Image (cartoon, rainbow, N blue to C red; front, side, top):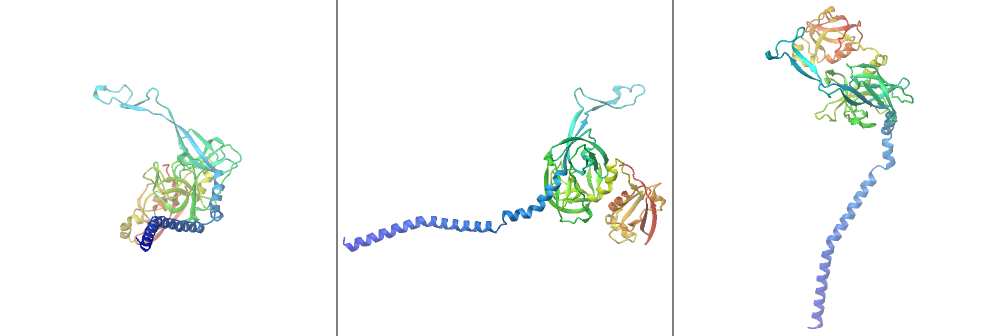
Length: 399
């Protein structure tokens, strides 16, 4: 083999070897290059984000609201006695014979030995509305039936509380603690709130004291919210997280003003599903003087069974009323202000004291806000025309 042939073989081996090395390294080089590109992209994204200082500046209002309101929010724990009794029928069958002289057949209650009374505990929230008097606002259903009410302040101090005033119909209650160095929060104007406004819900969900959640006002004037046996009207709706234990806590705006009292949720699970309800502060402020004075809240009573025109549009149209507002009188109660004023079935009330009446809920709210004896001016659609009547309110029966 001559030198030229040896050189060709050497070159061929070198080329093949180099090519193999290149192929082996190529995948690693490509991967490393891709990594550098991705690293640069991620660095660019991070550098485009707000700085820690900028984020802190954006969060300052929310942080300040939480710091401002939290010291006034309290944890409420209640104790009530629960007696477990069973019943048996007396003289329930012919074999038992007649009941003893002077007694009637029926149920006889008795308690099993060692059963009850049991102590049942509940939790809720509230907030200080008068630091000097130690007054705390909460929901009626939080303290209803409680024999012992304990309040824990935000700083950890604990006190036994007494009920000052309570109103089941609005689900509001004022309780009092003998404590000093309290912080209170002011009320804002719930009527000025708009859908989409930022709000904070504070309270003690599931007993987790000092919880703050954020959301928006989702709707106003929500009605047909059932709590126990009573149906409430005119709620603020929010998507701020509200759970069991939040009841009685404040719903506040971005100025740290109370615009509502967190009261209920709409849920299929018993937990937060994104729909919570709060009693508007405008209604709270109207009732507070009486609740704080321990007075029973009495409400005006017109004496009719109303239905909303929107729900009975065809009936209203047959009566000649084609507008989408008003309350249709379905029944007039005897011996009431409505009967004395000459109201009739199929009247459509369209105004009360100059305020246009949208539906039956507004009618009930306007009438209930007045004291018995108040004279209201009603504008009514009847027989194709508008008439005016003066009605003196009675007292609404206790629910």
